[in-house]
Amino acid sequence: MNIKEIAQRSGVSVATVSRVINNNPKVKLETRNKVLSVINETNYYPQFIAQNMRGRKTNMILVVIPDIINPVFNVMIDGIVQTLNLKGYKTIITVREGNLATISTYTDLLKGRQVEGAIFVSSSIKKELFIELNQSYNVVMCSEYFDDVDMPIITINNEQAAYEITKYLIRLGKKNIAYFSAKGESSSSKNRKKGIIKALDEFNINYTPNSFQKSNSKKFDFGNQVIDHIIKYPDTDALIINSDFQAVYALKALKKFKRNIDIVSFDGTYFLDIIDDNITCIKQPFFEIGTKAVEVLLNKIEGKSYEKNNILAYKLINGI
Image (cartoon, rainbow, N blue to C red; front, top):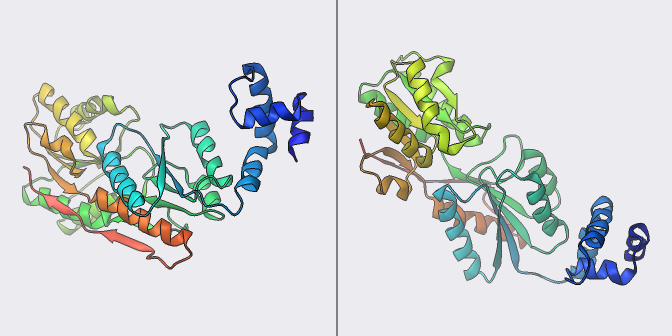
């Protein structure tokens, strides 16, 4: 497929196709959409870019984050951008926000060699797409990872962290602990569940499938989900929440409900600094996770060896 064939399929001139590719504002919207439709169908655009970029280094890195609401991503982005700047690289940052079409647009930058590599933060990419990209391009994922995929791991020991924070609650006398994990099957949630079960078994504390809940998709409605759980299981005396963001909403809901239940969370962000109550948390080194992701990615790009298992230190911050 070449630009002439694209023009023929679109029913326009070669010059018009060129204007569309170069985002010329003079092209009518109807014509632009018709040409772009053919380009997408034939996968021509990435090939065109690859031909024109061959042999040139862009010094651009793509960074994809799940959303802009959770402050942990801001801290990781800070680590990533600062480190890339020091290494002479520029950054393209995009927010997935659950939009598959959006991420496809940006991963085309990889396929078109417009960026040297990509960093996918946390749950910003699906397993199938990551596997596809990982086979041909320089990509890394930080904070999360996929089981049975040959990829570097850049995170904390979530199983050990959950084990420690659960033992902390048990030593406070808590026996009916509920864990609210992420909605999907993330590596962190699965490993945290393992750590919680390990601690409960060690102290011979019973638990049921109801002790492990998945957070609903509506972040701002999480407090109501917690209250529904407390009403259904009134013996609950402690909550382990997957993020500070959700922990704050849980705390607010419990206050309105007039229930005093201990909450512990993962992350250790500034969210916990701006509330009146103290919440014990696992403080994660998000800035360092970002810098480590850059280190691994640049080593991949430059064909150097890199550490596969990058397990960074965390801290248990006592707030209760």
